[in-house]
Image 1 (cartoon, helix red, strand yellow):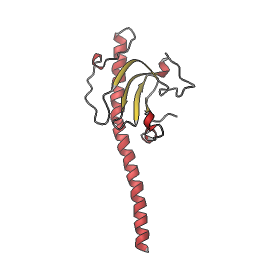
Image 2 (cartoon, helix red, strand yellow):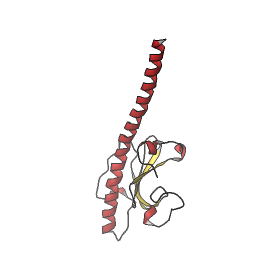
Image 3 (cartoon, one colour):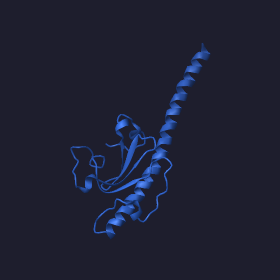
Length: 146
């Protein structure tokens, strides 16, 4: 009987440890995308200074090189990207053509669960894709909307 209880306790502890490990791995992988987007945000802002307050849609116009990410698809840069995923969050605050709702780059995770956005008015923002709308990956990696 004691052996059975010991096995149950060990199984429970192992399941908790595996879950925590997966969260740490996801955070580490998401950091790659965040770093790429922060570099692209800086490059887009420099491009804007030299080009009559305009952003670019072309990655090759920027002054940085982006290699193939390990955990993400190649990033997209956009000149006029607007989304409710950038602060202030949600449709109630979404203001098209406002810098507050504007993003200049995005990158999708290889597993298709989420997209990261480089927002002008705030930090990198995370949004689940339509297929994973109920997935909590953005929350787990600490890039959730308030």
